[in-house]
Image (cartoon, rainbow, N blue to C red; front, side):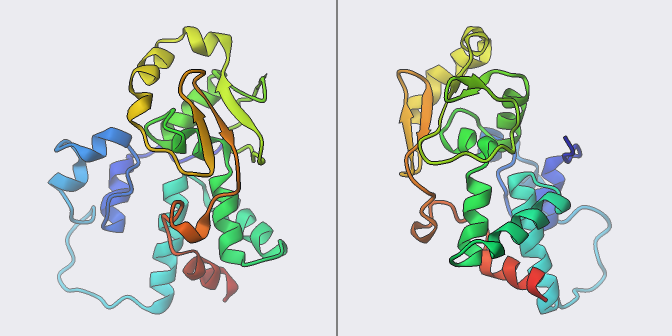
Length: 209
């Protein structure tokens, strides 16, 4: 599975804003963006005006980095979004939000998408009662995520169980804190702003040119 393995705090500094790629650490003074908000590398001697194309590229890169998707896979999501009926931008957001690692993160069972991917790859998670270790798997309405017997015995499960009640969950997910499981009850409500981490129309414009 191809993925970015470099320092993630560098990505936040590059984009000039917090992308919350390290979970709870991003809310503490230890956050690298709080200590060094300037972009990595030597500081430019003068500011350069960014073109419209450059702004579109930045927005696309921000979306890709936030969801932990490399360019080739992100392009496939775009092509699938424009093939589907409806608004292409909303289709793109739904495709990204319905990834297994994103739902695991949105439900509060992980502090970040990177942590969610690691837990899934270690075989600690089931979908509809069957173990699934593919973080990019696309889930459907009615699918339920829970822990495997080995996952329930893990130290990670105990830590999550203690703090799960303090997590806020989107309305399109149904979290069972007693059973430590989450079910997809509806499609992501793009219009409600619960899923907006990027401007989807700008990303569609970038690929459409």
